[in-house]
Image (cartoon, rainbow, N blue to C red; front, top):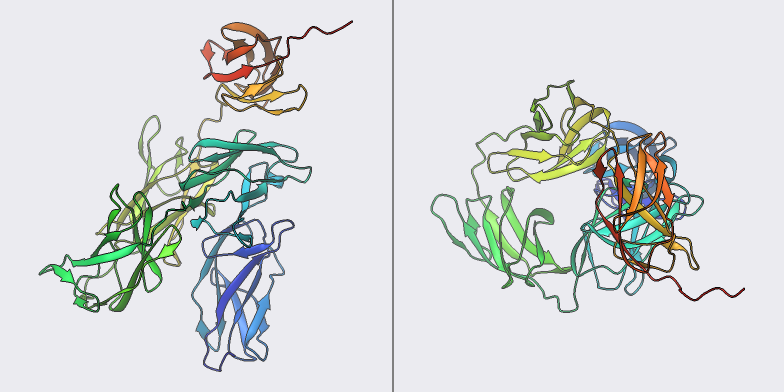
Length: 495
């Protein structure tokens, strides 16, 4: 039971969007604009709920100190730092990002990843699971085809239903999987997942090295004046190792081919620090050190200092300025060693770690055209905004996007895949209004005109059996090839 001196906490956030109900964790993404918040507080106290420092409601804790709250207004898309206060004490923030559903925007979204090992359960971004295939769910345009990628490699196709919901259980390779989905030429944000092998091993911290002043090894329980010591140990060869100090991530690295790893931590607070590492879903034993570093130097402010245009006539872009580069390089300052996340209109578009002087630099993922308010977040705090206007070229690239088998058991044909349909439907993009010619092994098998959005579709004339390299040509340019294997029946039809 909570006591009168118990501080208020947010212990659970639940996504209540239909078909995707489940817990949302710190730094997670949700398509529910009114998620349910629950937590603990002093018994019968009034709990005040804040979004980015703005009061959005209040509720009273019950006789056990439990409380629950659902916003009566949409939080809105973008990042939200949620906090609660009771008896004048403010909780630590829980940061979530609300995205528009792909069913309403057409842009595909991964909304849920479920680990099917043992009792199924939703996992968070960056989690580690067993080697049993997980179930991915999300949204896209109604009835649209969705292709799933792991680290850039296609691992499956599916089709959204009439409401725009889709689900698939793909087989993923061992190790780090950077998951994304593509539909109608648009890509989702990434979702990272590590698939552990049956042979994963428990990681170990073997040494802590003081790099400051009179450098030396620090024993378990020892003291150091270095608040960025180098921690070393062993793990499964090639495994991603994350270092924690009192439960806060302070660095990560990949074990080498012999299983050895080394991490120089981001700045640790003074006092006792229990160090642990995790990899393949397993934690090491703790290694305790006492940090006694000088606290005199002033830390850099969290800020965006510059935005650099790398496209065409490159140069600096001022606050409020315009750029034709939709992947500019953004630089600034933060606490030395801190993890910095960059947002554009509330959508994460990159992250990096500040160096020992507090400087960081991030080249963004593709930004939409129009006004983009850039902000960085680190350790629960946000910088001031830096506004740019993106005016990048939007002419679609000449490309083949999909090949569809209309024969027998119809469906999408992946790059390098096989089909029993020798007149498949090929679709893609080009300049709006352009004439597109389709070739199979150099022979023209159809042509069409791209619509006002640059989309085109051609049902090929009869293709020969065997490997067929499909390409399209328009305005003197050729697309990349798309290879299929035609295995159509050659049995004559009886009359």
